[in-house]
Length: 638
Image (cartoon, rainbow, N blue to C red; front, side):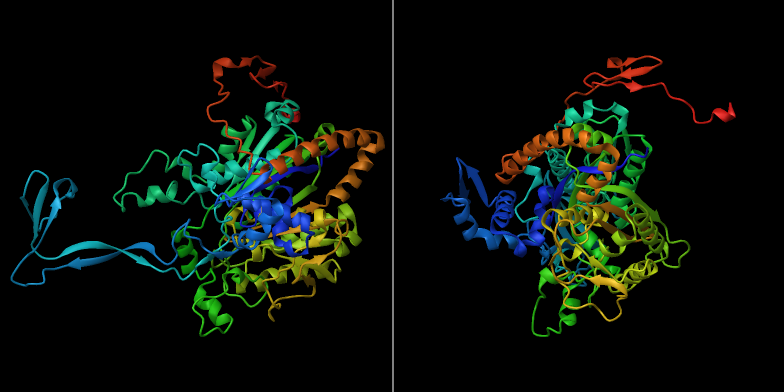
């Protein structure tokens, strides 16, 4: 019997807000929601952004005014919405109009009859004094330098970025204030918040889950695609000497791309099980998801945390993508919309998948998915938000330019469709499945990805598979983009609304549409209309992946065939208890009362504390032991 990987918890943070309990999804389809649900979304954003505090049953504004929930939302609701999704980069990250740069120049004396001279602190003299410098002491701290010839130097300056929009986390949200962040890079701060959110969304204590399996039956697969490139990670290490600063002991180790996985193991879950980091540009999340899905299906482990945390909104990364011609620059957007007399474009509409567009919009996100095998989920009464039976990943083969598209995505999408047809049937594939496209908003992507999707759809006889693209609202969070696609797709089965690509007014003429229906408006389909989704990633460098996601109601129907009514009745009773606990966490988070899990220096084990024999290893604090009764698979070779 092959185990079915099911989603029992999910959480994180992106530009739409908190992911758990579908808050981020609901921010996107906000206008179609009932008023009480809208209020929950806004109250959650109010505490996230520190615009309000809940105290003694009332809400306090930043000015100390005490309001009830309705009055608070009436007064700041529009402002809260404006602090989310793609928008102009806020100065709390950096000032896009005044980014620090250094200009190289050469100084000479204005009077040809005199040599250039200046005074400088003695301690600031270079270690290797240039040969054309003459140094004269003025006092114990100051010297005079006379230069025979020119002086090569740098001037500190600022410049205005031509790219000013991004999918930034809600303005005012600061994960570093929620725990002892100890100069952690932003992506790792987001990791602590996001992974904690995912675990608590289950309504089951992590210790209960951990005690239900052996220590080596847990896995964590997580990464980001670029590494921590801000000033507290690799960015600080690379810039410190040029800025006259000191490289710290944290710059290098905390910069590595596998650090999100390491932080979850060390400070949140305390896992001693399988760990891994797969990196594949935009497909990074799905590469890690594939490792988890395959491991659970094989029985190698029973619980897996899959995640990613990317914080790439820095001037350097933006400039790197801009020089590639990959990002939507303000001038190009103005030209696209024929706005000759306007200084800036509408920054909320910079990302326009499958429409007339001019580049992608960078975003930041931390997303975490907790997966179990179906048997454990049933045993613990865990809520099943969906199933992940398969992920397909393939490369592009030979290519001229490393950034050019190739053939790998045709393999991943067609394999996923064939798998889905085999599992749920042709009717489900053709009429009850939607596609969550990669949808970057570049002219090249709109053509190449639409061709992939159209060829796959028509090959399987489909005439109108709905296509949506979450990057229209969130931006492109690089390696974590797959997590955004996965978690926001789950919301479709909660509220029945398939988000449209509302930033795109019309599909571009060069987009392939046969077999597809590009969803340009939010649309009510009902919570049980779709049985599955295909999540697509078409990554830089030839990293392609397509994940098969089964709806919660269809997953339950499949499991009913496996377990029968009696087992599922017991499951349902425990499920209701766990859902109540999970909702208590949700309401506590809305009120701003919860803090992330961060177990620094707790329950640290050493080798001398282990009980080791030839049949098992027992770890203090873990209910079950590691089984050493391991059999070789190669009996025929012995």
